Amino acid sequence: PVVVTDTGSVPSLCDDDYENQSHFLPSDPDALTVSRSGISLRLHTHPTSQDLLSFPLPVSASVTIAVMEKSLNFPLFGMNSSSKEEVDPGVVEGTSLRIVKYPHPALRAPNAEITELELKGTEIAELAKGMLKVMYAAEGVGLAAPQVGVNKRLMVYNPSGDPQKWLEETVLVNPKIVEYSDAKDTAVEGCLSFPEMSGEVIRSKWIKVQATNLKGKPVKKKFTGWEARIFQHEYDHLDGTVYIDRLTPEGKQQVEPRLQQLIQDFGPGGQL
Image 1 (cartoon, rainbow, N blue to C red):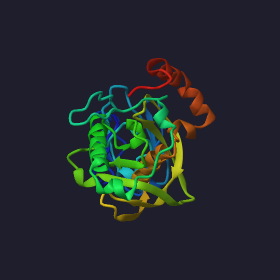
Image 2: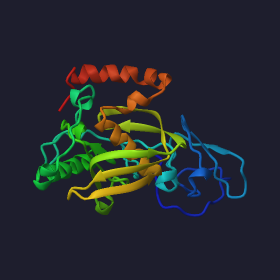
Image 3: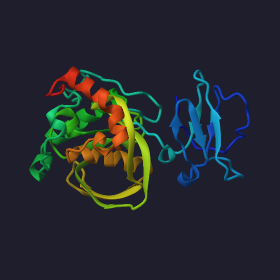
């Protein structure tokens, strides 16, 4: 497993044995390039050289690569920063919400803006609370309302995926991206509504966002790196777009057998 931990200094990468070691990399996103091919990683990491280094990992290796989350180049939206794979939580204690699976129609349906009157009640706050419960139970980092069968423009996320780090929770009502960076990056994404599959998606490195919080107060913020990718993924859901729409033709071809399996498993209406 590849695990994100705290950033530190860069040790020698010349050791022959990489099992059960921690390798700390520079926190500058431009200094780090990571790709995954089988069990090999290529790292642009050496503190005194611009050469691209590589090392193979034995299948049995347990290797920790420590970088800032924004530098991680293969996030999965069913994985949190502890590298826990997504699970289908089924019925989650404390809420009746359940994750819908492709091809559930809620994933493509229009999503209504939440009104000021709705925010004055408790329904939206309860919905957000339930969504966070489901997200954590699924070992995810973000969730949009249509993913639990509610076609409202509401999203929740926690970049750490850790329910103990509740101060990192974000709930956004009627969010809107007002500016995208020209600079892009590519990373592997998965989705809780598309279990057991993933693919490379190109996204903007930073975005500027306007939204409302649960108290009806306006929110304006610039998101970068990992948080920007999470936001863009969940924001797509609010527009009826899912990550497979953004895959390359080759990427779509690779996941097609799994999509057909999901249709067979969950039927034309998906699963609530």
